[in-house]
Length: 272
Image (cartoon, rainbow, N blue to C red; front, side, top):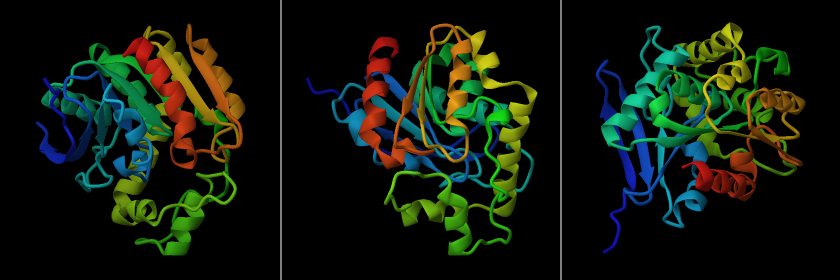
């Protein structure tokens, strides 16, 4: 008997009236990998990695566009706090009947992943953070917080996105730059501010240390947004596995997907 597959995208309207865009790949019955994108991005940021995670048929890969991003709603009200984003992601898993998941977050997506483990610990079997700064003290100030006009020009978007990548010769996909342009000024500034507020309240290693969840941290060693040496802060979490990725920057999921897929799949096999 062939296992049923769940491939494609859909829109889910949640109890609070917000509609989120959700993508699924892989066998419906397989253990779930939930992928959460970073700020000013979307589920598309995982496109190159998903075939490596779902192709063996061992995982059901779920991706969500957080509120304010991608194909999800972008309301002009203040509903972008990190715990609210985590609550919505948890409701998506409930609606899909996905059960427990290994939750993977890239950059600020790792902040939402942490909040999900706090808010809905029964849904999270393990956490993977990819280039997620542990605290605001690890942030590398560049002098440019984002585009200064809205909608931003192509040059402004490229300048903003440039620190997100470090591999020599890597060109940021135009489709991903379009995700910034598709946001509203409010969703852009509010989601950035929500991440900052959550980190100001309490550092991630401190939050994760009391949750008892297995933790894998992958960090591009040449990150130009967060000091890669700060990845060592996650050793405060009992049993945490921390790996630096030489030659890669802030976005290993785009710069070199196989180098992320290997340790991620090994970790998920142990804790999925």
